[in-house]
Length: 349
Ligand code: KG4
Ligand code: ZN
Image (cartoon, rainbow, N blue to C red; front, side, top):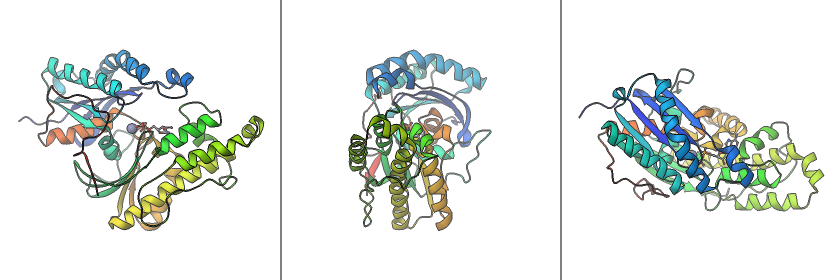
């Protein structure tokens, strides 16, 4: 079996279309992404059918653009990787069908990758501006916080992941987005809450921090979401506008407190001193700051990807795919998209 050292990767699990070429050691040789924020904004959330249709329009031009950035030809690409689960089924379908077609046309092996595994490995990709502080070294604790997931994993080895805890209702990103919508910031709101919170008083409003007692590693954000809604209902539009910064800072602080506290518990319970925080919400400036402070205090080797690898991107999928392909794993042309993870992807502890 010939050595796999360069992979073209496709990510279309939600609304971002992304293509990357990833080389040995997770070096990102080219990356291009298109987001659909403006398309979905009028609907206040992602409309799956529209996301899917836009992937079909964006994907092949993006593959060509990424190949141009890379500067090589298809002869230089050894294999393809594609997010095949979990995600929006129509969106995933576009990526999977395209990857299979390219694999067939160019006679390359390919592999379907779990999107969450991509997030877990994201801090270990590298490029000209970013070198990870340490190489991929198992085991470690990983907190994936995104729009669809909030989970703590014990990452034992490549492909060997145990769920330590997960959200029982909303994901942290969802809690950010729903609150942003409630206070009129539009969609997607996480990054807007982050910006407004920077000059706000986080002690001004009291929001609940759920499930913090004991060693439980599951999360719940629905109480916080409801508390946000109830508080805003008691305020006039003018009051909300006048207090936007404090509202955002207080709400954000409630989420960050829970995330850092659970990460701390996970590290303590597993006895590990290495941790990763990844996923779209790991782009949050307050979370990054507080997680780094916590890590410094307890001497935990913490890795958080640079912003471009926090939110959905094909580079992390390429790296995950590359590692599996190098172990000899392959997908068949029968591979289809799945809205959920496979039971063997993550085991509950
Ligand atoms: O990982 P991701 O790009 O997509 C999913 O797999 O879901 O995460 C998207 C989520 C959205 O909920 C978005 O509002 C949130 O990440 N997000 C943020 C920030 N940037 C993105 N949340 C808080 N602060 C940010 N700076
Ligand atoms: Zn994601």
